[in-house]
Every structure is written in C-alpha cells, then in structure tokens.
Image 1 (cartoon, rainbow, N blue to C red):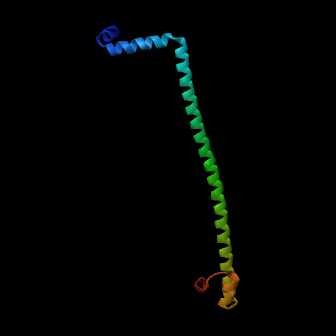
Image 2: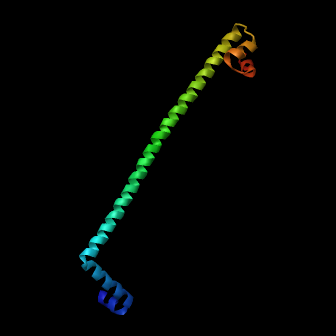
Image 3: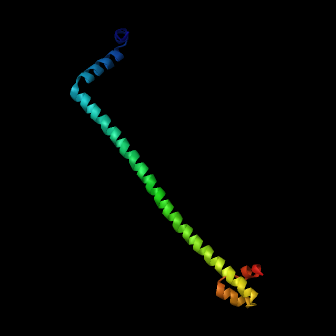
Length: 114
C-alpha cells in the first residue's frame, strides 16, 4: 500500500525519502532527540516556575491578608472600647463635648448611643 502511495505522489515520495535518510542518520536522530529533550525540560522548568510563583503569591497574599485583618481588628477593638467608654460616660452624665474629646467619637455617634 505504501509503495503504491509513493509511486502515485512525487511529493509524498520525496518526503518519505527524506524521512528514511533522517532516521538512518544516527547523528541527525540524536540531535533531534536532544532538541526534543531540551524542549520538554524547558517546558517542565516553566511549569515548575509558574507553580512556585503561584505558591509564593498565595503565601504573600495570606501574609498581607493577616496584616490587614489585624489592622481591622485593632480598629474595631478601639472603636468598640470608645463606644463602651462613651456609654459609661453618658450614664455618668458627662458633657457630650467632653465625651467627644476623650473617645474620639463624633457627636452624632454619641447621640445615637443615648
């Protein structure tokens, strides 16, 4: 079957002849295989670098997230303490302007606590 195909089509025959020469030339075959190995190794290195980059990015993201979470937690804690202090001062009949100055809360925030 292949012989018929080769006889009927000169382009296929020429390609087949080149293939036969190539596969019989050990040096060419070794160069070709070395090139394939290089390409596979190169692709593997790229994929490993991507994975490492993703892992590193996740680590950094977690660190930043923790930092931001701590900042927010501190802010919320300070705000909560200021509200508790303001509520206490309101019960003790402190002047609103004094409560504003001591707690850092706005007059409106203090009025809402009443």
